[in-house]
Image 1 (cartoon, helix red, strand yellow):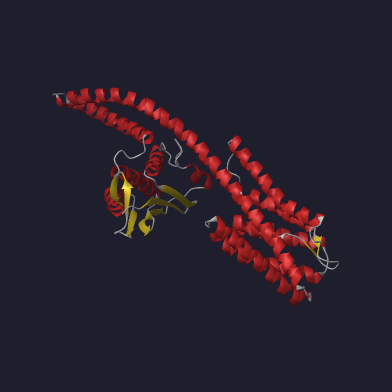
Image 2 (cartoon, rainbow, N blue to C red):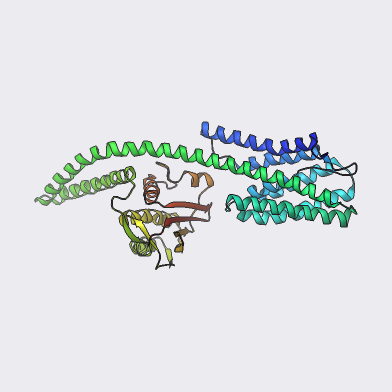
Amino acid sequence: MELFTKDLLINFLFILLPLFVLQMFYLLKFVYQLEKIKGSFLTIVFMLSIGLCMLFPFSFNDDFSWDLRKVPFIIAILYGGPKSGAIVLSFLIITRYMIGGDDLGFYASVLIYIIMAVIISFMSRYYLKLQLMQKLWMSGLLVLLSAQITYFTCIIFANVNFTTSMWVMYFVINLMAILMATLLIEVIRMNSNTLEKLRKAEKLEVVSHLAASISHEVRNPLTACKGFLQLSYQEEKSPEVKQYLGTAIQELNRASDIINDYLTFAKPAPEQMEKVFICQEVQNVVNILTPLANMNDVQLLVNLEGQEQSYILGDRKKLEQSLINIVKNGIESMQEGGKLEIKTHYEYPLVRINIRDEGKGMTQNQMDRLGEPYFTTKENGTGLGMMVSYSLIKGMGGQINVDSSFGKWTSFSIEFPVVH
């Protein structure tokens, strides 16, 4: 029980403290509508945790002093990626050198953390996509691997012999710490995502109420004006007058389309549920947008898998409208041409539509704001098309996931529950 000294408890505190600071900043971001917290902030917080753990180690016996620096080191790379790994590794090595001590111990420590940084950086590519239980398993396995590397490195290079009880205690303490830290950081991320969804939902609700209350009132006089203009257009008029009337009718049609978008957003749920064949609707969208793709020097690549099972329950016209908006945005984002891939994939109980372009891409902040009222990345866009697409897909029980690399590509993954 001598392990559970005040120094060990302080090390636990140094691991938990940055997580509470992170939670505080996420709450401030939500309350004051701040920009998205940068990844560098997470790196700095865990660098502070590593430094404090190293300054206040705990002892197994009179010969060895260890700390829990491995825990913030592993978490910083898993959540921050290779770039964060290079920063925290450099900081750890410099801090270890400044603390001093046995040269063999220093070199052994450098070797251990370089090996771990390479392994964890590779695993970080897949870590954030895992479920919670999978993340806990991976964190625990990385701690076990780190303890094994430490064990053999110390025996080979530092001629240090560990007893079995010492190794088990060392592993258990680190395991408990990283599992607790992983759970806390996942709870923080979940709370932040929930608050962000709440903020978006409030905005969408306001626009929905405005759409429902105003659109009907505006469409009625527009319909009357359009009818009288069409009657006047059919009468014998001079070519100049007919040209003016035709332009007025076109503009009224455009205004009517915008109002219809608002009405669609106000009532996104399908009015008549029907069995929809996803592959057929995707092919219809491709046929409609092929001329636009040719005009923009864009090659459409279509791969329709799982055609026998790709049926959903929804509204055919609204699904087509949503896909047209997304594919059209992808084509227009490739100003110098390129390839746009459209794939369908069946994996019970879901069918996925993947749309990937080679356009200008988006930043993380832009991806987070997609689907919000009046947000657009196009110079002359209104943001209504993507807002309507999100609402329609959600109304049919679907979900949109977006991934992008700024300046390179953007990928939309649309998921629907299948129906037999």
